[in-house]
Length: 137
Image (cartoon, rainbow, N blue to C red):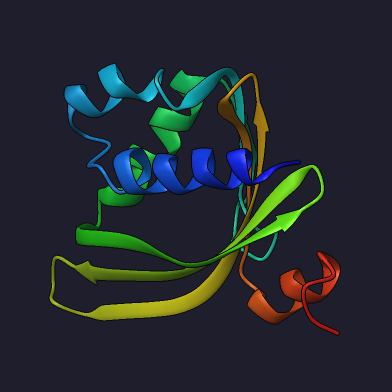
């Protein structure tokens, strides 16, 4: 893994992941940063958590996240080069249509293939993800 992969993930988060998944324009741009065989894996702690392969499957699941929300945002805080993966600490924030807010620190483990993000594993236990990746003891 190289610093090039860190930059690919950084750009994908900045230019793609925070775009509204309900917008057709978001998905017109997605092929620029997501590998055609992209896989998204939710944290097993999420009720009904699953693994989604392909852009259409990912589109459906993330669009579903927005149904009860007025706004949602992911802010990447730190990027770690972890061999063949990039670990990113992420601040997740959302506001419901009723005005309730939620936020949490989590981690994302990204793999890059052929210059694009090939997978994203969400980890709610931020500290455990850092330990598993060897970033913290």
